[in-house]
Amino acid sequence: MNLRAKQRLDAVLGGTAIFFLKPLARLLGMALRRDHDIRPRGDIVIVKMLGGGSLVLALPALLGLRRRYPDLTLRLVCTGATRQFAELLGVFDEIIVVQDGGSVFRLVQSGLRALLAVFRCDTIVDLEVYSRLSTVFCLMSFARNRICFYLESAYWRKGVATHLFYFNRSGSVPKHYEQVARALGADVPSQDECRAAFLAVNNLKRTAGTDGDRLALGLAGFCSDLALERMFSAEEWAELATRELQGRPVSITLFGGPADREQGNALAAALRTALPGAEIDNACGRWPLRETASEIAKMDRFWSIDTGLLHIARQIGVPTTSYWGPTDPQTLLQDLPGVDEAVHYRRLPCSPCVHVSDEPPCAGTRPCMVGHVRKLSEEERNPVWIEVS
Image (cartoon, rainbow, N blue to C red; front, side, top):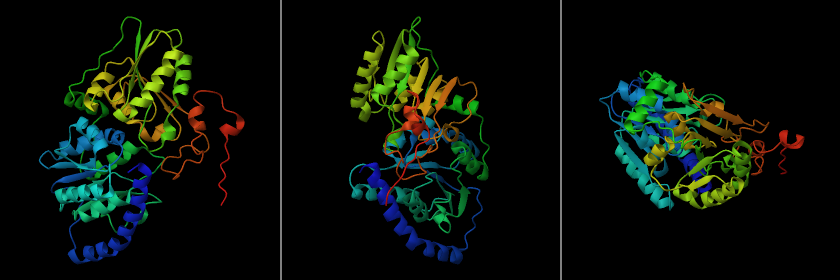
């Protein structure tokens, strides 16, 4: 299933399930009168289906829980794409994967297996802010405490979760995660502690890759299906590279997953044309994520859009240059001490749009990203989007 199909399934199936299950949950809650003191008394389950980068952002909160409750089992329920990011964190005792690729039957079957694995856990924490099915999953776990986020468009969780934390879309996502950890009794470690733990668990060491005067540059130009508007075209990356790197000796390594290999070839060709003397290596899909992190650690600098690899590079301490538009860096970047970074954000009146609008109002024209490459016209800087009904 593609992302849009999953979102429709989540809205229809999840919404229907909540409609029928919420009254039952309230009746059972009144009948059972369980003690919902928020401090964990048994195993803790984290639910994060999509967004490996978000798990990296949650590292301080997760590491705090791990240290506060070393004798409790800490599990994660996620999809296969998120699992690799989870393994880098080194905080989970068990990672349970829901198979979201392929048929609905496969998704339901693996989801039921995951539900059985966490059934009657003590505390379950849903880090999926916008998903209805993850809320249903938490409810059906029969956990003593079910912890979720709510916002103006997801207040339907009231009566389903036992504890609701307000999620401000314009606030810091890592800080929201940390609020949950503190409420559960954990002390949130410093970013220096998190970085040291991240490097140690992955046996990583920050090493500059400079060969003489040649700049070793990593480039992550691809992202998940959620908001493809975050991406530059190959030609736009080439224009940026020409402007910033023309005449400078440079070797560029393209990072991404196996699905990005073909687009990586097109980007590599555009960069070779723009920078005739540069060494361009399309490494998309070449390594598993842990080895990818090791290669990122060798870079002198890392260029990226809003993608999970950017958060890994920042956690390692690699100097970064990032480009934003459909998403807001102020909500998605932690304050990391000692990080040399340049953050470029074109905040147009319609930005950010991800998780605010079901469809981007620009219909894919991306003026907020194009604005990094060239000067926008007045109409592009202050766009008017009209939908005729």
